[in-house]
Length: 300
Image 1 (cartoon, one colour):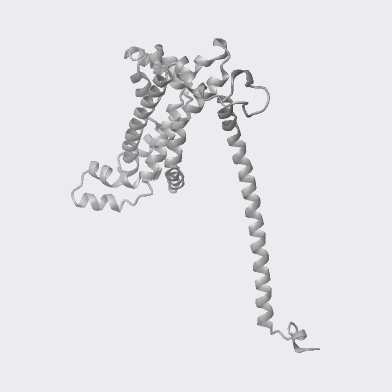
Image 2: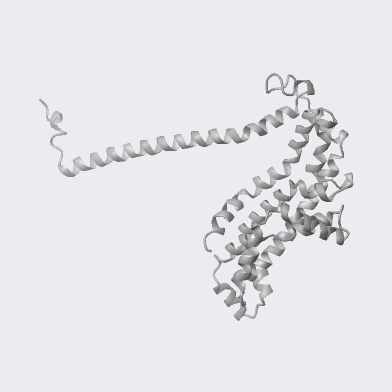
């Protein structure tokens, strides 16, 4: 028998240990790869489940009315004219503009007021600060419907019913935004404030030139949440608005209610167009959203 046949038996202990370690590492790598593939398959399945309703909505928006709810998901012919009919049946462009206008103003005011309040709670020491913050935070526990009647009575007394200001002003302040930005500001070293104040910077300069730029991920996170939340707000605009030309998109879509005639395909076309701003906003700013959520809870 040749010497090569006895090679495995002639290996030294370190060589055998090295071979065993290599085999173990290879087995661990295969198991890790298998787990990763299984996880990805599960995530793809979950993602498809979330995308399925949106896909149905888009395909339904391209169907003739007679094919809605019957037959296959795919239309026999893609009816792109449904999107043009939406603008013909209702003042969709006006509703679109109203929603974007109101959501943009509310977003701007919420970010501004929340950042100021958060700066006060996180960076300035004053008597009773933490107690006031907890009291302010407790208002988050109140359901929105509980505050709707008092807000509506205040808007009546201010003669702001059926106006954009009546929708914007009550939503300009939010304890959630204050909490989110305060948590983010607590992660910023106070030495930056002290160094700026030694150089003669006022509290406003510290807030504007130092804290806000460092809070960009948190600010963008709040922008996304606030814009989307107010863009799709339904009940408060329904209560406040009386004139059709002031309707927002969620309220305006009631024109496609089945009591006014079966127009499911047009409703789906309108909804498809209405989600475009939210999708664009999320796609453009999603990396800041993830970073803001991660960093916002680092310190309490």
